[in-house]
Amino acid sequence: MEFNASRLHLPRFRLSVAADLCVETVSVVSDTSNFGVLELFTERRDLMSLPVLESDRPIGLISRNIFMSQMSKPFYHELYGKKSCIAFMDKEPLIVDAAMSIEELTFRAVESGEKALADGFIVTRDGGLAGVGFGLQLMNVVANMQAEKNRQIMHSIDYASVIQRSLLRPSDLALTETLRDAHLEWQPRDVVGGDFYHFARYPDGWFAAIADCTGHGVPGAFMTLISSSTLAQALQQLGPRDPAALIAEVNRGVKSMLGQVDERHSQHGAAASNDGMDAAFLWFDYASRQLHFAGAKLPLFQLDPDQQAVQTVDGDRMGVGYVDTPLDYAWTNKIITIPERSLLFLTTDGLIDQIGGPKEIAYGKRRMRDVMLAQRGAGARDVSDAMLADYQAWQGEQPRRDDLTFFCFRP
View 1 (cartoon, rainbow, N blue to C red):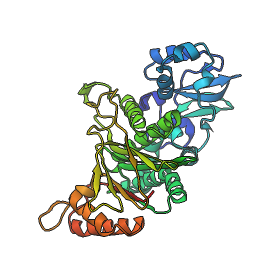
View 2 (cartoon, rainbow, N blue to C red; view 1 turned 90 degrees about the vertical axis):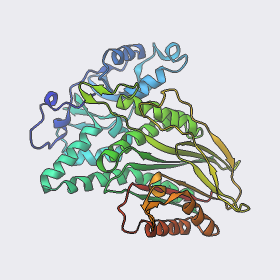
View 3 (spheres, rainbow, N blue to C red; view 1 turned 135 degrees about the horizontal axis):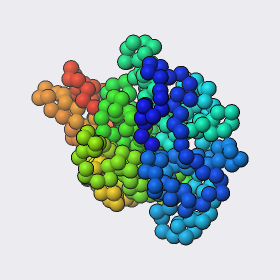
């Protein structure tokens, strides 16, 4: 649902409680059929989240993106159309009282995970439904509150950085617990950035992703929120074992969320968005020691113990989510058997494209490969430190061009 301050009757200068973010909305009761929900979503294009009530109290929240994705699958109309809508609802949405402070709401939203920021939250008054709120509104409000309190825009950006780093922290913990010889470097060009990563462990393997979203600073950070939350939904629906299918699902989600489903260049007199990301997704299977790799404009670099040169495994030359990316584009999985002690490296273009050196040219892939070869016997952390030191020496006095993210590991 589009955020519209005039519809919300927001205070001009300061928001202080959850009620100030509350948008009145339609709802359905728990015995409503999925056909009924589908009809409602079809009629109301602006409806992004739909509360479900039982005895006049909210018990769940249906995400438009998830519901429409599920109902578009073969035979789902026949199997689920007449069944209760609780089949596709989030049974544990974030539910807050209208009197809750914005500060407490922010922490609750971060604690509840990406779904509250992506799909929104339910606002109640005396236990009954008052309306819904949305994550992008909340982040915008937090930024404005910090700017008002401190009279400096950097304070709001610092607060956004806390939120962004909080969303990345579960991946840091999972990586530390899963891979003994790995290092992930994440340095936003500004206080917040447009790169993000995701790592998760499973009983039979692990999943990893790095991505470079459009933009830097606050605009880039908003794109990471959209993209990472869409990835989390895709993992929940499809599982982690098919990286190419996950990229395709994220592509559909980002295009749908940003309205980039065709090549319209203007909307209501304003320029339409054309945002997306480059990405690399990995699934590593413990039993077979096979790495499943799918890339959207990002390659994988591999140095096996018996090789004298770094091998490049190219991904598809198609970005994710952009206007000119087909909605049904199918990325390709590359399945690679990884020998023991192989060194692997993923990076966004912030490393390769950095201008520097005596001729003021890009750092490039050749220098990156040279560092990998020189450090081939070292641990992943030492390789990463050497790469970062060489990169910084190359940069010299040149300004940082982009966010920097790379993932170095030995499976």
